[in-house]
Length: 345
Image 1 (cartoon, rainbow, N blue to C red):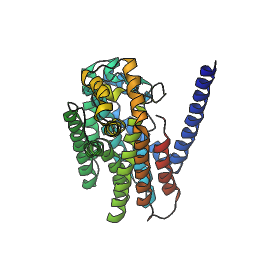
Image 2: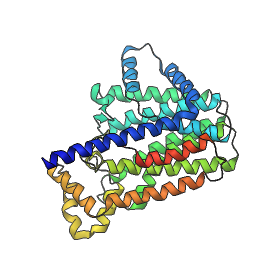
Image 3: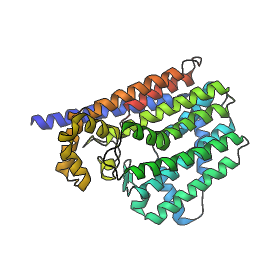
Image 4: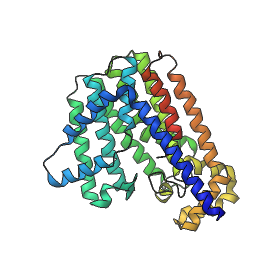
């Protein structure tokens, strides 16, 4: 009876947190409501197709869209330093197309069947459909980018695509290594995740005619925000039973060493780590062993350490905004840092 009450209480607190987070994202989007509607209109026009199978897949992908924080950050950055232009809208569309393509390809590479609250494209169709649909989004991203007049924006978009691929390959090359250090982990997430957020905020600034100094501040802000985003995702992997929009322990099963595990293994030492490393080495991911891993990571402060690193990046991100004058756009970017810390999906 007591256990049931605790579960109900935890579920109620989770619901309250989700409501608070939903209010936060609505408040963050408020300064760009008009421009965000323009972005969504252009996105739908860009991906429109008469090909039956592709149309069904695109409709499904759109129905599973998340908070779309990347285009939001791009538009907010543009608004903070100048005027949100047609080029800002185009850049946001090109970016989201690239991001969506990377997710569909990732699901094939990682053999992922669930994403957020629904199934992946590869699960509902097959690998071929996921790869070809991802290619379609990638080609559309390049097409929108090519139509922009600012060559630097197009160049940066190409660079971030290279960083994404480089990050994935670096992560893949580390999958055979049971133990990697924190420096290698940080390099992977800078390339795989933070580069995309850095592009959002830098290109937002660039599309609004920002100074080179402001552009660099916003690029750094985006990088730190991306580090927070990935570390939060890594924490979700050890939250068994939580409604976090993705299967827990997924990273472990795919051979990815994330910061909570890296720190816990380092802190525990060889003797205490040996049984856990044996589970990882043999891919013995039974429910009992996964619970054992979660307890190990918690016991040796893997989650607590990762949360402390997130707070360090939070302070760094906020410092990059200090030189900008107060405005609704700046406040939304400040609130975005807190949202990334608190998000539950």
